[in-house]
Length: 291
Image (cartoon, rainbow, N blue to C red):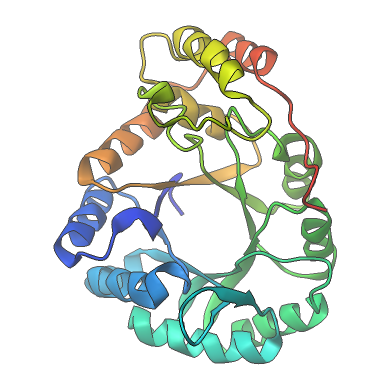
């Protein structure tokens, strides 16, 4: 799996545009494509499968399960049951146009789930050769601990950035100790850690940062952590600096964005001084709600 993966949720539903984005990723040597049955009612999986058909053996296709669309498509319900997972995987395979999934992920999870039953479903699919590996996409430390103790997950997808350092203390060291890869998403914190800075900032701020705090720290971060490089480069290198992180899944809505992200991952790692400055000026946030 390459250090940079393409988060496919943002490629849209227009086939030509989506294919150009995927082609740009392939040009950059990216072999890891992350989708979910939830995205665009399964249309995202169909596009990914069609675009990657001739490259199937050279790529890693990751998809997710657990969010079940209501019949009227107005929303979804959570269903981590064995029956649903084993039925829904068939639909994902059909849409992707493949007979196996490289990485099948539970798209969430709570302590109220029938965790042993969910694990059983993944283990059976693995034994049947329908999936190669399985993981979870979760930011709940207690759920992550359950899967570390009870399953053979190979990865946990987590939101992580300079502005969201919640996984650093509770989750990442534990996963690293057990040889489980951390795949990060949201490295640019909704564009705040790009050269656009506050252009898309919300009045509500971001996580436990108020808008005023963001106005204060973002220019300093850009100046002292990024320096002569782009802010995107500094943001992605911050993720890669953590030894637990194996890949970053970054979304892109244009080929240019894919090329910029790839360039950022290939750029020079952050220095110890830059890392120290980032950690000094940002908050070592902790998980409050996700228990």
